[in-house]
Image (cartoon, rainbow, N blue to C red):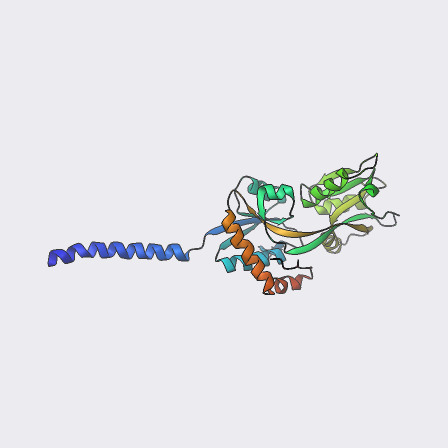
Length: 265
């Protein structure tokens, strides 16, 4: 009898160890790394931590999924390069474009926005379509969703003299160069309207005027295809949709005074 008991003890210990390991595996959520840039009013640093409506919605979505999501604010080119190398699970903010779809599963829309054309104050320019940009230098931040959208507009021109796209490292540089006349006497800027208004207020810039809306669009999350399976993306999208239909997404975005995208199935 003693020999049987001695033999049983190691097996009991083994079953206990397996049980504990299984419980840990079930309760430990996989960590997902999402990278983004400082892009006020959508994403920014607050007390040294990522903040903003896109961050709040992502955190709430991850909580619904039981995912442990870490968010890093980086220069956009570095964030995009990490995503392209498969060193991050997610990237935002992104547009639903062929370029981004090649890299990532693009989620349901979260925030609505629009690209506007800006001119120097007092100029008699009004955006009326792609051909109205003919022959002008246009500052734009890129590579980014805005530069991709502007390039598509320029390629759609039928004018003999196409517009010239001038890529800049950030939106603030675009505004400052336009104000100072660096894009020539007929220069323009192409930018997210809310971003432009935030920068103008934040830095006390004057001397510009909005000259027309070029495109309506929405911002989404991109889940990198190299790292996130189609099944996990479907789970993410389902949780994001449930968050919207429950009214929680609207609650999270409301304090930022930005338009939430309509809830889609």
